[in-house]
Image 1: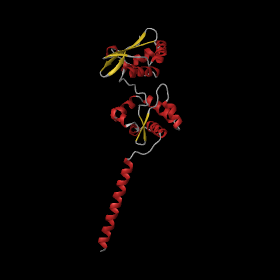
Image 2: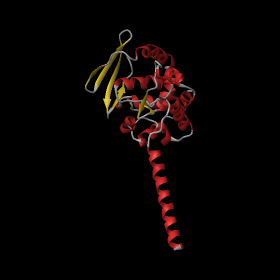
Image 3: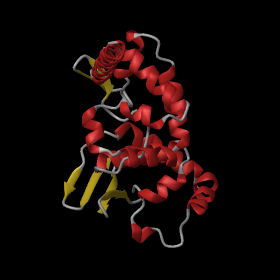
Image 4: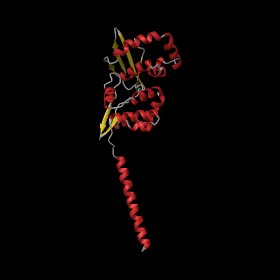
Length: 229
């Protein structure tokens, strides 16, 4: 009798334990309520601590469907300066008012989305030098020159223009001899960054300023930029 009672008690304890585990897992599987400012701070903290997977999970499901974790992580590794800048910028968020201010930023607004009671970051808040469209390539071009990322400038150049050119030679040229020329170009190009772009198949052109233009070329699935004229 005692053995049966012990066995019965053990069975009941096992059932209770399993039920508790199932309940716990179900609880974890449900999206937890969150606030926009908390999500942004969590994202910034994950970036600063190198917890790339945790940061990636705070991006929206739509974003994660388009960009794999492996591709995203490689972009972070290729752009440590930009990751650090984004982390510091987003870590300053303290409340919903701060979030709204970043959402209304004229240059690079923060984009959030709410799904099933949970907030996510919908658009990449780190400058990763996108080349998916002519406009994206142009923004990357301006940002790369502003940050002196000549390795990115090399990536943005058409293949035909790369012969004998390295990021080191670009650094020497643009960092010294052509410094004033680049400053003038950016002063004219940046205010016109949203000017209309005329696209025809694998070529595109954007007139800007007085009789100036940017020419784009689609190569290997990425838009490249020839030197603005």
